Image (cartoon, rainbow, N blue to C red; front, side, top):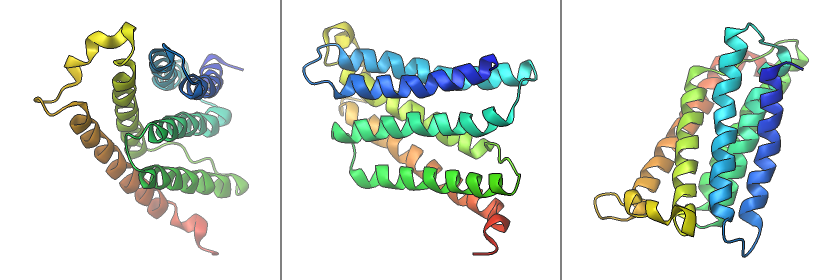
Length: 194
């Protein structure tokens, strides 16, 4: 297994560690640790793609598993943050629906011997999702001693940390829907026999 694929597998493992850290009750440093783990996992997404392209290590495993690992990480982030009450569950449902749709299209394509790589719009969507999740994790971490200093930084013109967070989540949501519809439209031939 090459280095980019190892980073992809590591991102999957870190997704579960991240979810566990936010799930443990009474852990005084859980939010801070979850922020760090999520940030490292998100960085592996950037790193594995760069290494794969630079060293010509692009594989079918990477084309399939890299987007899947991204989806697991992002779904974990949104589910855990919804549980914390930062946004309503329907937003998570829309995000999950888009991810299942794209994964389903990839499975149909794979059955026909076609590998569908990630598209630029999907990459922008993932970037904004990561930014939104990290922002809300910063809010959680700011309640803990190690990151308490960041609380004033999260204020948005005196309106509180949730205003900027809501703006970020709406941008991420719009990009999620638009990229999903675009992906569906571009690959509609795969569903021609439905």
